[in-house]
Length: 313
Image 1 (cartoon, one colour):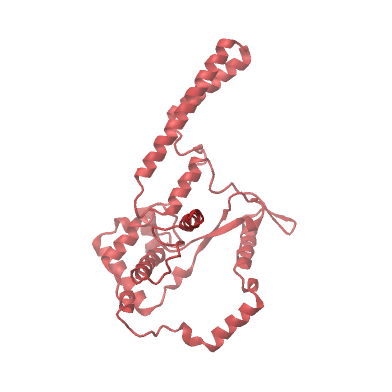
Image 2 (cartoon, helix red, strand yellow):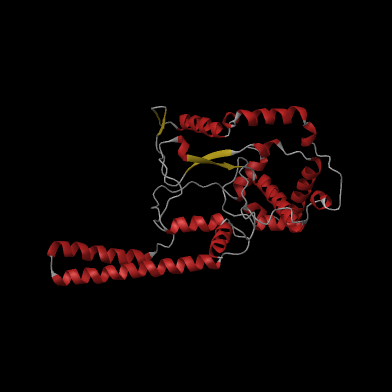
């Protein structure tokens, strides 16, 4: 084991999930709800045995109490979650909590895959099936013949379009200057501490606890990469996980979308570059005002409101 991985294991050891721990059905599930459900179930069983009118009334009373406790606890949990939201919170975080509140699981348990009429059960064989499925989605064979000819012509006869030799101007200097400590701190605060690490096993929590001297070294590394335009080879390695799409059959490989776990250092620099590009595009108004997707403070709902307003007028 190298020194880097030994330090990682000592600082934040990797743990295994406890198989004996029962999965909590909902994020707001607590002892009050369990007690109310237990009392309701006992009253229901007694009602089914005796068929007595008093037992029926008692069951309905305890059923109403259980419903009220669940509803109030869910509302309090959602309000507490909303109190933690801020301007840097990702929209995916809100959607994940909304799905959990509805009892939707993010990914089902392991199930066999069906490929060309064959049942695939071994994990190694599943990985090969997923690799072929994901590769086919991104394959150039999906492009039309006209687009493929156009692409080949551009790549062979217009190589100057891929060079980074634009003249320095007052505007481009904003993009090419070194990253600052403020940009690094902003990118670190935008990260989730509990996100899964990449192949290097470096957790995002490391950056939240790095001393100023460590952050300075990270910033020097990023500025060196930014200046030379060369990414470390290890940053291009990713662990791909298949995530089942909502409402899709778990036995079909096409029902899954890939999620890539890359290096935390790579993700941190990507966030810094993205923040600078978005600031650059918004500051100099390089995006059309009709674009709402992938812009801070906007959403595709804006176009629906514009359409409704136009129809109303």
